[in-house]
Image (cartoon, rainbow, N blue to C red; front, side, top):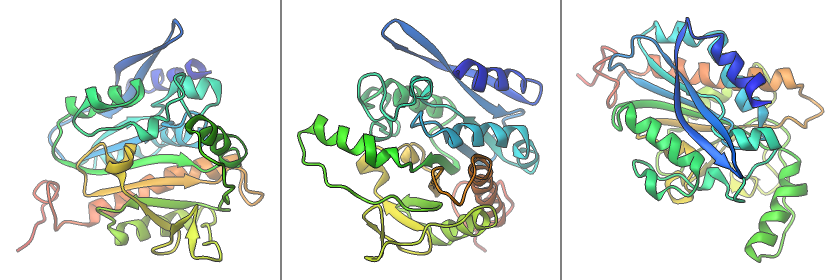
Amino acid sequence: SYDDDVVKVLDSLRDEYDIIEYGTLTYDGVSHTLYAAKSKDWNNRPKVLVTGGVHGYETSGVHGALRLLQTKCKDYAERGLDILVAPCVSPWGYEHIQRWNYDAVDPNRSFKRNDPEACGSQEARALVNLVREHGSDGWACHVDLHETTDTDESEFQPAKAARDGDVYVQGTIPDGFYLCGDERNPRLEFQRAVIKGVSDVTHIAPADPDGTIIGSPVVCDGVILYDYSALGLCGGVTDAPLTTTTEVYPDSAKATDEECNKAQVESVLSALDFLLAERSWGPAAKALGGGMP
């Protein structure tokens, strides 16, 4: 359950992080409190957001975010980062093993940066408020943890077509890990760094024969691009110059649940390593001691 798998783990980490309640989801009279963990001594350093469980049934995102908090996250905070982790954005979906929420809304198509009232779901509204409470500006990195599962084609896509009055056209499910970057801010060198790190943990999805993954052109090994803002994706909820959305394939015969969780953790660590190494841009430059000469 959400309480056993998420809330109790966060409770055990209160000595290491500030555990905050940032909202409540209520569906059909049942409520779930939303929790996030943030590094102690939050102090206007480069800000990092990690989100998991935007699609509740994509469990490695949830468990990967929690594993991050249990292992290396504190070390990176001590290296000069303010880190905020929302490990389970959609607890109703987690409890009911669903991509959509109770209202048949996909939370990951309902985000509007800096405008919680325009968000199309309770989940998105609460997270946007959380981000605003920690400052709309100055975000350096956001990693949003997801999965692509066989049920995306066997259940979700047919249901979506039926809901929207469309004809279902069967797609393919990539066998392996891949990333979805932001079409408006692709930062391919950053995406490549994350792919390289994750490749030590699990296999990277090859392109289909037409050069695509889930119908989108592969722009470099294991990377496709979406327009985060236009689609209302969680990955666009901050102004961070470094953003990516992970996609683990938990149904692969080549991967275990443990590998999937490790891949999610490694994706964040690789992103943070890149962030700490890059010192020449934007809001993080001064705090990192860098900047253009």
